[in-house]
Amino acid sequence: MQNKSYGIFAEFYDELTGNIDYKKRAEYFQQLIEKCGGKKNSLLLDLACGTGSLSEAMDDLGYDVIAVDRSQEMLGIAMDKKFESRKNIQYVCQDMRHLDLYGGVDVTVCALDSLNHLDNLEDVSNVFKRVFMFTNPEGLFIFDINTEFKHKTILGEHTFIYDTDDVYCVWQNSCEDSRVRIELDFFIPEDDENHYSRFSECFYENAYPLEDIKSTLENAGFEVLGIYDEDSFNPVREDSQRAVFAAKRKDV
Image 1 (cartoon, helix red, strand yellow):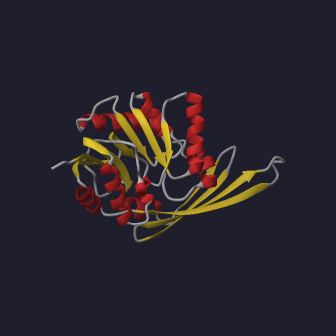
Image 2: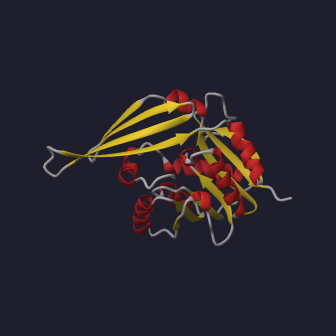
Image 3: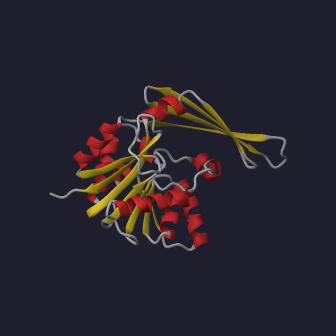
C-alpha cells in the first residue's frame, strides 16, 4: 500500500483482505518473471509492500527481498511476521515517489493496486523514473493496477460490509470520473462486548487510461513486454478489472 499512514486500516488489513491468496499471486509473478527472461533467486524489490505478505511469499520462492512502504503501521506488522518467520527480508520505510536504495535490483514488483493510490499521473511518472534508476540492466518491473472499468463499474458508488470477530467495517465508495473516494468506518468491540469504539479513515484511488500508463513507462526508460488480464497471460480486455504490466529496463 501507498499514500497515507493507514493507522487503523493497517491493524485490520490482513483480516479484511483474507481472500487474497499471496502464495498463488507470488507464483504468478514468478511465472511472469521467467516468461520475461528473469531468473530465480534474484534480488527483488517489493514496492509498497504493505504488511509484507507478498514479500514473505516471494522469499519462500527463493528471491532475496527488499520491501519498501511509506506506512510505519503497515511495516510494523510486516516486521512482526518477519520475527515469527525468521526470514531475511529487509524492510525500508520510504515513499515510493522518492525511492532511494543502496544499489540496483533485478526485479521490482508492485501489487494490489498500490499505484492507484498515487494522486496523479505525475506521481506515477516519478515512481517509474525512480524504479528505473534502481533497476539493474535488463531488469524487470512488474506491477498491477486497477482499471478505469473497475473504478467506474465495480467500485463505483457501492458499499461493502465486513463483519469479523475483531471488527465490523463499513467500506463506502464514491466515484467521480475515475477517482474513487474510499471511506472506512471501523467498529471495534470493547472488553464488555456491549460497546464499540468507532474509528474512521479516508483515502482515494485513481485510475488512468492504460495507454497513458504504457507511455509513461516508456518515457521512464522501460520497454513494455506485455499487458495482461489479472493473474493470467491473456491480453488485457476492455472489461478487465486489473491490468498487469510487465516491463524491462531498456538501455541505449
